[in-house]
Length: 230
Image (cartoon, rainbow, N blue to C red; front, side, top):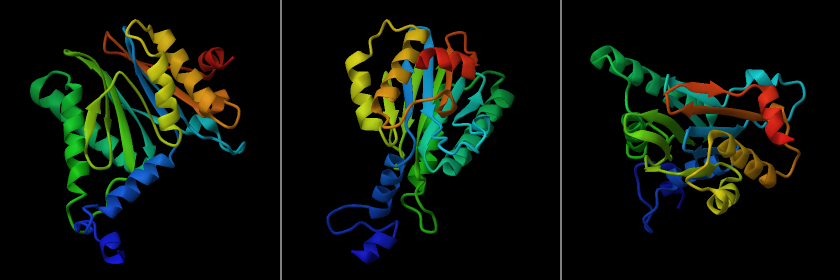
């Protein structure tokens, strides 16, 4: 099995790409990230996993701006996520320059998914060890997508990824409803995360932002997050 284990472009006899499976396991070890679609926009909440009191929590950013109307977060190897986000930012700006309009969310998703798939079949690469949650609002409505290391993308109403992803997703599945407001979406995401963690949830550990239906991005301050944790 070791030969198949080391070669990204070679299937094992039982039809598996082992390096891709390892990339997915890396995502499972990453910090938990949550996306929730509401009637007023789409919310992203992520655990910054700041466990060392000497780290300045404000310096840890787990939610990235792609464009004025699109944000993203990730679980897994965050430097890999930054490479993908920077590509998405360039793609969004190219669209602005070429068409004088904002790019739609699915175009960003498909571009990143194509790159992530390419690394699963090309020698000299390794798969991206990250799953992305991409949230935004465009002319077609409110969108939340995930893109995994294989390049598979799906649209969701709510989803959690990372270490506690399955557990939090189950909580979201039980509590999500299509009438949620932005505030209720934030409350749902943070309470679900709080229930899943083994250690206390503090404001230093939470990063939260949302995209409103007017295509603007809002980031919550520590004081605003504190109200949802209490």
